[in-house]
Every structure is written in structure tokens, then in C-alpha cells.
Length: 234
Image (cartoon, rainbow, N blue to C red; front, side, top):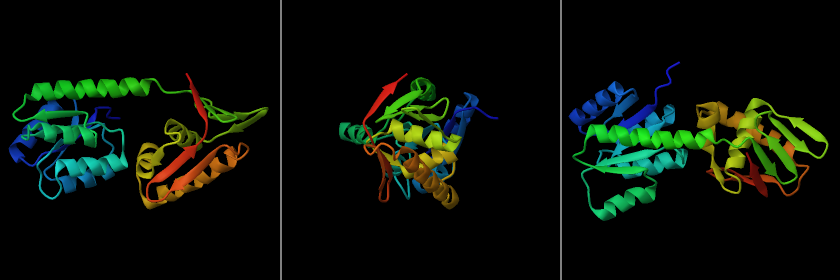
């Protein structure tokens, strides 16, 4: 299995884009190159990327618009903007959208790679601190044993139930984007996986109904929200 980090590269300058892709591949990354934001977005929906590098000025869909749409699907994937626009307001706009870095042209490819590596190390560090136990209302949820405990009762969860509840707990009292959950757990956000997730949401609601303080609600057009008093323990 190829464990190289996957980079989604969107750059409308054909020569620069090809040079960047070749350089990234030489440095140990898998890089997919697209020359407009529209094709880049379609690729993002189909693939699973560790980091995105977007040129700002692109045809069909500019980098800022592309980043907003990517953020609606996945609120966590790192995004780096490449641009010739060096005005402070442009840079601020990029960070407001949720950019992790903003590099102005011309730039050193070596510097770009160092920044990519720094961001991926930070992301990996966060993932390394996964929570193994949640306190959800009256329940204790052991993510490693995949068990929900309430008083003297133990509820064994399936792997999918456990993964989905872990995501909900990590976004407790916040919206868990539907597409993000699908791509994280099921890899693909197709119709059948979406229906499958709905079934698992129903199962989790049944498991959690013994505590009336806990509720999983639908957020129309967006996803789900786990409403619960929650404490976290490592």
C-alpha cells in the first residue's frame, strides 16, 4: 500500500504546474495536478488528499472559491495558497477562508516543500493524540474497546458505529459535515454509503436514548450534531 502523502495541486500555469508536480514527486509525495478549480474540486470529491496546494487565479473556479467548497466538505484538510497577489487584504482573505499557509510568487520550491512537511507534521501530531475515552452525559465511551458503558450496562459497538460516534464526539455540540464523515469513514460519499450512514445514525440514537440529555439531530443540508454534556479523558 502506498503511504506517500497525497497532494492535490491546482495551478493554471502549465509549465509551473508540471515542474511543481515533478518536484513534489521527487520529494516523496503523490501529487495530482489540475489546471482549473472546477476539475480540482471534482478530483477532491473523488480522492482522499492529505494536503491541497491551490493557485488563487484560475479559470472556471478561482482558488478562494475552490477552498471554500473544499472546506464545506472537509474542514480539516490543510490548504496552501500560491499567488502573485501580495496585497495584505488578499493574504488576509486567504487566511479567513481557512488557509494554513499563503505563499507569494515567485517562490522557492524547496521552501514550499518545507512548509508542506511542517504542516503535515503538525497534522500528524494532532492525530497522534487521539482521545480513547469520552464521557457523554451518563455514558462512558471507550473508543479502543468500542464499548458504550452506562451504569452496569455494556453496549458493544460495531467498528462503523464506533468510528461514527468518535467523529460525533470530536465535534460535540458542533456540526459534523455529512460529506466529511462519509469520506473519513466510508472513503466515498456516494448514495449507498450515505444511506448506510443514516442507518448507523439511527442505531446510535437507539444506543444513546437511555440518557435524555443526549441527542443526535439532523442539520438540513449540512450534516449532524451530537448535543451532549461531554468530558474528554486520555
